[in-house]
Length: 362
Image 1 (cartoon, rainbow, N blue to C red):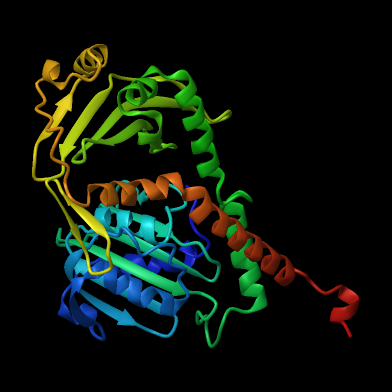
Image 2 (image 1 turned 90 degrees about the horizontal axis):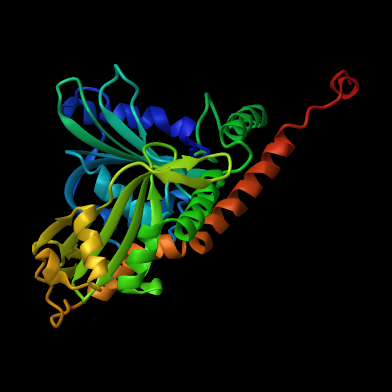
């Protein structure tokens, strides 16, 4: 899977946070804090060179954590599995992870890790796993490798060149290869599959977002819509991908449709909306979905009591906060990644220049 440039340096830091038995002695030098973890990260990350893409529409993450801030490294750890919340938060604030989150290999303690970031010289990692005692922990870390200490000082030209070659090989000379394949597969799926057209027929083309989860794994097609000012709908169907052409080969199983009712939208101190899904939850099988489509979206035929005249305040802001990373990914994420990668490539080319034997002997 594709990872950001500095996953090589940050992996060991995350492993140390979530991969062993933890007690108070393991966190000497760490300070305790509680509140909105997302707001805390937004405040600290720029101090380490992290480029924040947006502070709008970010959900609050109430939590208690312990953190440590060094000159070029920042890390925190908290009890419990906060990876889903942080993954969503970082995807919007910093940009989608390069590649799907990576799970630990068989035989290792259960865990999952992802890497984020859009600018060279710094990266973010987030991971969750169980320690030797079976307790769940979540770790978050930032490494600014422009100032990273290697031995007695900063990265030398030789060390940077070696790091660059490893990263360049890992990213196969294109850090956005997986995203580009995803976009082609989605475009092909919209043109060839029936399900996306059905969702668009019921909710309108501009009101539906299509994407594929786990593109390089157990791929699942998703078509998501927001309607009546209080409901979210997501159609999911397992698919097979032709990776050579980045096309959807075929559908592997029946479709399922999930409808959730938003009862309230809360706004964090940073202004980010978060939905309370405390209302109804319904699941339709493929036959029920076909019936709904055949009857022009008449919810009574599938026994789903949709309220059509009571929109929830702030619902549109919430819907947009979820949609923006999908709809504006190329502008807000791909472009900065390309610029950062080009800079990294140029720096790598410079540090990879070896003097001739004649000059070395002078």
